[in-house]
Length: 381
Image (tube, rainbow, N blue to C red; front, side, top):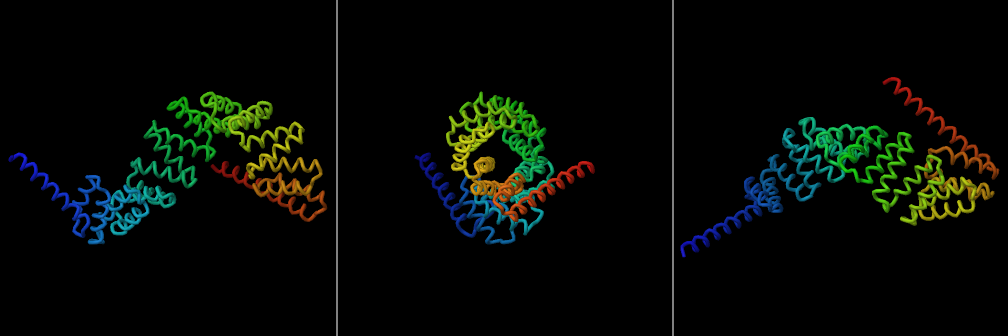
């Protein structure tokens, strides 16, 4: 009886203590110890209320605001967490760890510029902090500042060499920065980590193509196709590489194979139309190109080819429409402006023709100046 009575009393004591902790969490009398206890028990919502009560009772307690921010982040309330961290730093700018946590919250919110600001401060305070280094690299990647992304992601990947996702992001940064040797180096590492990844072979092909090694890129895509023969877009990439290499028979076969997998792949249809045009089969080319732009209205190649066919058919007004669409899709390219000017000439609109030819001259001048500037910078370095 005594043992049973003792067990009952012990259970009642535990229940009373638990009730007391709950009351503390809901009242203004919560202490930091109570809040920590609730957090350790996994009672995160109650811990949030406890820390909130502490900050209301003592609005100058920087540590309490910092702890509130941590709890809110665990609940994925990142905007509220950022506000708590902001208050903590305002109260105590030297509070350790807050800049990193704040940077993470802003990163989760997609505010990469703010994340970079706080993560740089965190890394300056602790240069060996791998989490800050990784997050800073990812934030620069999100901000499309690929050179800085490479700088920090290289450090992160070196510290975690088996992290496939890190190497992928670093490789993508290298590709985007047009640093193709860097990209290929990362893809070689990825291939060692996962030799059966078609994605790695595809990305390696992109890097090789960027270096002008189109035939080697073709072999990489073929390897990817052997691994995943039904994957959408792989045949299209292979076809595009063959098209670049002016191997039009092979390109046609690859584009047709893509359409077996994805019958509405507008880009594959457009390139088949371009190949038909190159072979002077204008009727088939026009049908394919018009089908492509009906599926997807932003394929510049298709509009340029349609315009060319319509000029040959002396349908000049319709050709104007096609070339104007090509200009709209990429105003910086000279070819559509030039063809547009030629059509205006045929139609007797010399003023419009001269405007287009002037645009061509202006664009070429800008292009030449950009090249000269790059060469000057290389010489200076």
